[in-house]
Length: 330
Image 1 (tube, rainbow, N blue to C red):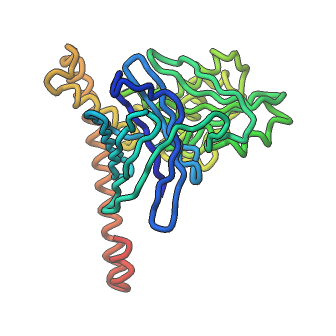
Image 2: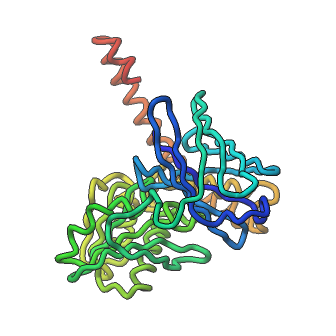
């Protein structure tokens, strides 16, 4: 089980200073898992991220936080869990429990003392943030090294820290970087801008800001879409592309042809804008864009239905020979 918290807490919540680092142990029967929670002040109030020290350096983001008095309630939709906690009067502890899939597990936090944090990166690197879009900053890791620049792009759900052990192996021949895409890790989490070309533009913005000359881009999994976006539009800006288990349909994306997995989130966002009070005055423009995309969406759905029918026919054939195997696949 990977469990971590990402909190947004209203400004002046308890009259306490929440800024800093908290750590606690999630107890799961006879097993346990160390959690580190980092909270910072932001223009809108408070924000924080938490990490499962024993399992991953990646954060799982919570979707909502409500607070009344000293009680905190956190919804963690991505792991189907809820956290209930209470801040102590002295502001030094948060005592509570995590409820997940019918289980209730104790989870108390204490402020981490200086130099005693559980969360440490052994990988030697420098971290910075680079502005790539309006109110969007990306976390960039720099492991140093000499030679041609090499930039690692992580897969879905990971930040650049996934390369903490791998990246230093190349510093003898390359200057090695890692970029955390928008929506993950310490990078900004805007509500839009997740198309292949927009995220490709994010990478190019980092390259330009740091004055990196013709790097090699190495992308894992879904980063294939960023690799292909940059390689097809601006091949002269990179020295090469390395696909690490990244040659999936999204890596061959053609916006004229479309790809359901990549296009659907943007289409759904446009439908959301048609709701009362959410169109920002551009309803006519949104409607025109949706009408223009409907033929492509219809084609993509027809293709998916054709695939589904072929799979069903195959399973029917398998069922005639081995019903149990067919049922397992279904």
